[in-house]
Every structure is written in structure tokens, then in C-alpha cells.
Image (tube, rainbow, N blue to C red; front, side):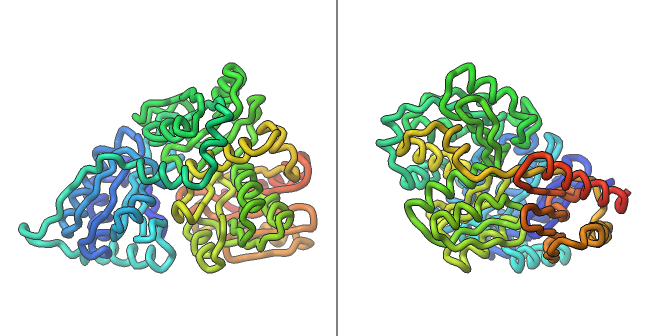
Length: 449
């Protein structure tokens, strides 16, 4: 089986089994053609295959007349910021996010510094299929310029969000788990400029992950131990391209990805009330926080592009996803772990509570996430089976299927980036949430096996 996933969000695949230099060059040539030979920001996460992918992408971009601003190893949100900063026609981040080490991929950016929206992504897919690329002659080929300080504009924007002197005065101890991803290049610099005493785990951006790269509880036991050992105020864990952030509190307790957005929203909306957008798989704690601060609350379909589109429509103050992805329009329309860390530290600096006490003050829900390998052609059948089994729930179709009761909900939907169905449930207590998720998984599995 060829391991390659192509969607409006970009491309992911296994190097040597579907993601070959020829296809990567074609994808880059399609982006270059769409951008009409303009300036393109190019960056990559720390994966060992990144340099091979980079050469193939540079070939496709320069062959279509694009000037390439090479940011080297940089975070995904840094790429988005650089597109805005340099008024580029677009950008490409070379990354497979949290996928295993053998994977890599390409994430294209619009001139807004955001991932492609649906219409733009569909045009890219059509162009890629047609192969009608605008290759130029020898005298019009693009060139490559290496950027001297790629992270600088991103760090500067993040620092402008918060009260830097107040944070510096607290001299927070922070353990940062970069897990050998792109965050290792610039995140310690951000935290040091905030006056933090930083202990870094996996601080070399070589893609040699020390643990499974998705920042889930079971993968972050080392971070929890390090927080306890160092007596740290917080532990921060990034995924390989550093757009997502999971948090460990001052006792070494994993408080997760869902609370990343909730903590930031609680702090930001308390100071700047306004519309708040999350996706349909994100914890209802965010709806509670919006109500607490008297703010509009909106849910989009799952997917960063869908969240951004609704944020722009509603002129949102803040948005994001429950996978630890906070989107702050003042910095860029892209999920951003720098923003998350800055806001959490700002909230701590202006309060008297520890991180654990702050987390415990928020409404308590249990959210359970599972996944099942599933061919895409079986997703509709899985949704139908689930709806038939839970006839007493309010069903919302379109983005997979979401079933709501007064005190709980469950959702099933196909992943945009992996050949799986995601099953997510949430309830006020652990037992109910786990039971609901397990029931849904068993129903889906009976249909797709």
C-alpha cells in the first residue's frame, strides 16, 4: 500500500513508500504555479528526512520562477508569521506534525500566513492532478535566500501579547520538552526572554524522537518526572512542528492539550471579551469559559482551516482546537505553541494561584479520544450505525457525526491527515466518558472491520 495522504490541508506520506522526490517536486510546482512565481517562505521541522524533501521542494518552486526564502528548521507558526512579515505570496512548511518518524509532508500557507482554506486547497489538488505547471525558462528561474533570523519576527509578536516585565519578575522555572522537533531551535529563546529558568528535554532538532511524538499523557511521563525533579512551575510539551502544546502542572500532573486552549481563553477573554471560536471536537469547557466572560461562542467543523475561516467571519478575539492548538490573530492565523506558553505564563504572573490551582478552578469534564484504522469509504456506514444505536441523541452531521445529550457528547469523523476514524467523547465524569467512547468504538469497529 502506498502511504500518502493528500487533502486540502496538504500532503503527508511515508518516505520511500509514496512520498518520493518526484511527487514532492510536483506538489511544490503546483504551489509555485498558484502563487504565480512570487516569493515563498520555506521551512521544515527537525525530521532527518527534511533535507531531502527540502531539495525536491526548492526544485519545484524555483522551476516555476519563485523566490524562496529559506527559514531552515523552524516551527510551523513561524512559517506563517514569516509569510506575513515578508508579504510573501505563500509558504510551505515541511512537516508531518505528530506522525511517526518515517513520515514527512508539506503544509502550504496562503498570503495571510494561514493554512489553505477549502476553495484554495481544492484548486491546488486540481492543479496537481492536471500537471499543468507554469515551468519557466532558464533566464526566469527563481533563487534561494537564506533568512538570517527566522524566529525573530515570531518571538517579537508573541512577546507583544503579554506583560513581559511582570513575567520576568516571577522568574518561573519551566521544563520544555521539544522532543527533538523544530521547537528546539527557538522556543528556549522565547522562554529565556520571558525571564524563565528553562530545562530543555530533546533540545536538538534532529527528529530523533525520544518518545512517541504526539504530546499525550502516556508519552510525557519523562516531562512529568522532570517537572517534579526540578520543582518547576510548569512543563510544556510541543509536537514536532511546535504548533500544538500540552501542559504539565507544577505537581507534575498532565493537564493535557484540551486545557491549553481553555487556560489561554480564560486569561485572554477576561481582559478582552469578544467572539471565541473552537471546532466541533473541542471540550465544552470552552463554552463555559466564554459564558463566564460574557463572550460569543462558535463551533466550526474540525480542521485548522475551518476554525480560521469562522474566526475571520466572526472577527474572533481568539480561537483554536482541543489538540493544544491556540490561534491568536494578533500573531497569525495558525496554531501556535509560542502564544500558548506566553499567555499561560502571563496569567500566572498576574495571579496568586499555581498552575495546578488555576486548572482545578475551571469546570471539570473528562474527554476521551480513541482512533480506529478505517478505509475512507466505510466512514459513512460507521456514522449511520452510530446514529442508529443512539437514537435518543441530537445528531449533527456534516463533519462526520456528532451526537449530543444534555450532559455528554460523542463524535466520530475521518481524520484529514491519517487513514483513521477518530472517536471522541466527553462527559462530566471519567466513567461515563470512557463508557460512551468504548461503546462508540465497538459500534464503529463492527462496521469497518
